[in-house]
Image 1 (cartoon, rainbow, N blue to C red):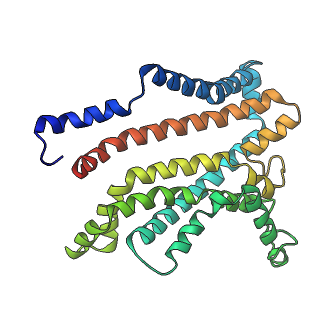
Image 2: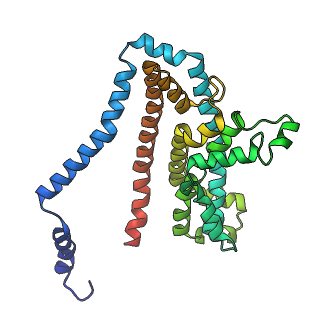
Length: 296
């Protein structure tokens, strides 16, 4: 604070921290409660999934994974993810650029539309696609005349996955790009850089960690989506069942070992996603430290 001796100014933050820090029994109790909550609701179910998956041995586990319907579900899940994540990445970067760098009429409406999948139930989203593209839907007769089938087919699953995942990249980038402003881009353009050069050499390096973080979250949601995909898939085994839908079918048929085997594979993909997410956060922390120090 101005006007105070340096020794007092240096002591003020430490005193403030001591004033707002709870006694160690309270801190220990809160930490123990949080760890217990995580263990019961996250770690224990994950351990039980893998334990049940391998309860009947490796042969049963591998047989469940190699089963043709399981392979079809894995391929369809990966296909929907491979299509939806790049498209949502392109949309997210474009939308974040437009919203953060420019002021235009309809900007708030665009922000609201981006948040729409967060507010709408995935089941409702699937029903919307059925109403639009189903055999008796708004566009159904025209699609049937031209031999195009979307609902109960792969295109419907991809559309449903696109809908529920498209906010993730944009919502990670918009706050960061708004905070960064457009001074660096304006400087690059003033020095003669083209729009693409400005994006690749100025904008992209500044947002790369947030972009990667959004892609990881988008990928995780695409692989695990159930509600919207369930409505538009028709549950056709070997054709339109993704991994979550295939797990449900196996569980309802009392094939518990096979259901948990496929579930363990999906859980493993989720764990890999969390590890990648943690690595991105760890790498992004040193990059944000200099800017925070400069702001302080």
